[in-house]
Length: 135
Image (tube, rainbow, N blue to C red; front, side, top):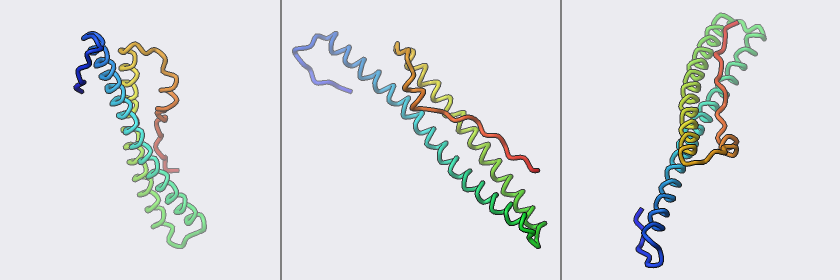
């Protein structure tokens, strides 16, 4: 970012301002990277919840002594496979978000920032999800 020449500032002051602006830009990009990764994670989470609701509906139908129980069991297994694939996708996206979070902390540390409490609160990376098991 080019700055207009100001006769009231020394070259050192101008250079210091440029360093601060660059630091802010780097931190902004690192934070944005974590935010985007967490947003993607939330999208996958929403899809997982929708599939779990669908699975519960099928299980409810099976429990109501559905006359075509064999077909319903196959459908249940297929949905569980889809959910487990989505869980794999979630866990990969979670690892990506976790890595981006780590990079943000390392960047902050490199810039001399040692307290990360607000960062930890704002950019919470959720735990991994476990696969569904067929009963």
